[in-house]
Length: 233
Image 1 (spheres, rainbow, N blue to C red):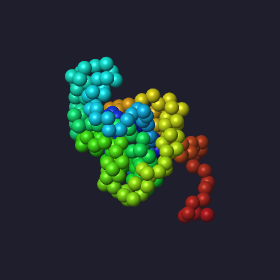
Image 2: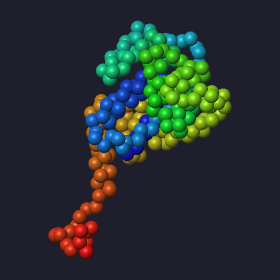
Image 3: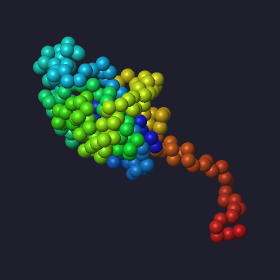
Image 4: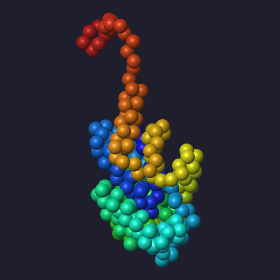
């Protein structure tokens, strides 16, 4: 089974949804055969780096709310995160551009470190208040997750994986992704948003059952006919 997950590193529900999916997979005995791939999606491709703006100011401006109302919004997300074992600190969060972080994540995927790097980026944003638009920060985090510093710097200083990120974003729009996180199972079933764990379990089990059925034959025999085995004939 293959699960594709479109998400952005500055999306709180993407981190919450990631953890809920992981909790759901732990309940399925066949989860060892499941491949999870994180796909690129930018919530704000025009976002700037190092603006000095905090997340509450950005949310207040975006939704026409007061700072206090914005803080109420993030408090709700913080509570949901805590239920999944995550620690969010929106007072530290730095709005930024995530394009280069996605490029490095694609490089990490090629190196077999895609999921550890994605996890490290999420944790850095929501727990530590790090700026994943800053090249030095991206490099430090990627190295902590298992990549080689020189290779990460080479990616950031060039244009590698630019088209990969753009292609995944185009793919998202083509299949109808309007918000993230967005989970696609075997390119047949979709789960939109950070749904409760039970929704993931139900969807995953349905896909697994379908895979088992597809890999088995329907026996049309009316009785046990003559046949050769490794013990006869």
